[in-house]
Image (cartoon, rainbow, N blue to C red; front, side, top):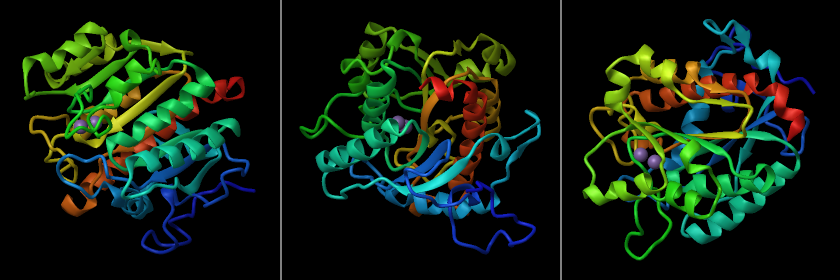
Length: 315
Ligand code: MN
Ligand code: MN
């Protein structure tokens, strides 16, 4: 079948059935390259809920998605067969059952040799995604955009919540910690010993100060991930609350949408095996700007995936 975007010049952008990037909605086993998939689950949230509504709102804001990237000079929707493959099964009242159902869904997707960009959902949903990716590719390099380290301890007796996926990913051997890269991190922390885990495992943490003290210098010094299997997890709260108010745990003093665009465009990644965008909570948003930023990030991630296309057959 043809993987073409519903044209805004034939069908006005407020019309039509809402799919990610106005791309066709197809079955999981269809012949696309990259599946965009919703993960509507927010049972791992510690503060503001609502990320379960992220996928449907980002589909709605996808009305404004366009395929040609000006500064890259590439039409990603011509280079890649992109599809909306619907939502992963989730269970709103059970983290455990959600992880099981997500595991089945994404293991199947990996066995079909597909690449995906998952649209959350809260950040607890990244762990089962990394487990599925690890089954196919082994340990991956993680690029993690976030205000938070997400290496935090259990809370209320629960090991798994939206602030723990990096700790579990390291402990389960899913990622290479000293080759991973965190962007947009900032305080405050509960205690200084919140830094013990990242120091012990030599995670490459960069803060908003590192970006703001000289953007071009920061971009030039970013690691080169080359052909290594790489995964990008994008927590929308890496952005300042003025750009992304609709999120679970906002932290002042964050990145601008422009800085994030520049960082995503400068990443040296040739084998992006999977990605996610999480923590968009539409009920706390203003004028849908958070979902709009998520849609724009989805576009940049698709561009990085299209750069990786040469490696798709190696999977
Ligand atoms: Mn996070
Ligand atoms: Mn966060």
